[in-house]
Image (cartoon, rainbow, N blue to C red; front, side):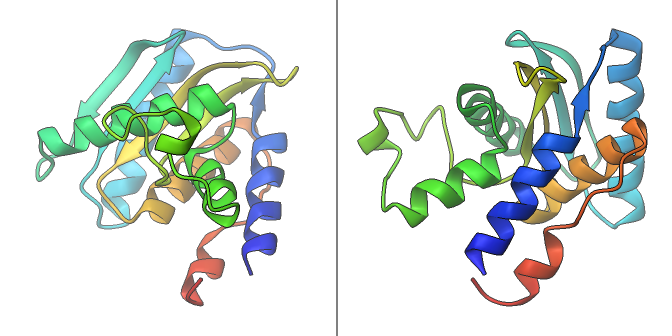
Length: 166
C-alpha cells in the first residue's frame, strides 16, 4: 500500500508544476484553498511561500498559533526535500530514518503531510503551498485538488490509500 501511495504522490508532484507564477495567481490559489477547506468542513491555516518568504497567509476561525507553527515546519520540509512533506515523511519512515538522523530539528521540520512544493515545469522548487488544520493527508489532498483545478490537470487522490490503515 505504501508503494501505491508513493506512486500517487510522485505523479501529483510531476503533474502539478507551473510554467509561470504571479503573486495574483498565488493569492487566488490561497483563497481557493480556504474556500474548499470550508466546504469540506475544515478549519485551516493556509500559507504560501516563495523563496522562503510568506507571500500569502490566512487563517480560518477555529485555528490557532499551533497551526502556524505546523505550517512552518511542513513548508520547511517540502522546500528542503523538493517534494511534498507527506511523500518525504513516508519515504524516510519506510527507510527507518528519523529527522534527527538526517540532521534535522523536530522544531523546524516534520514528517507530516500538508505542504506541497511550488514547482516550476523544470522541476525547480521555488516555494511551497501549505495547509494546517485537518488530518495530514486531507491537508495534502486539499492542496493537490486546488492546484490540479488551477492548472487544469487531472490527478489521482491519496485519500483512498488512507481508508485502509497503513
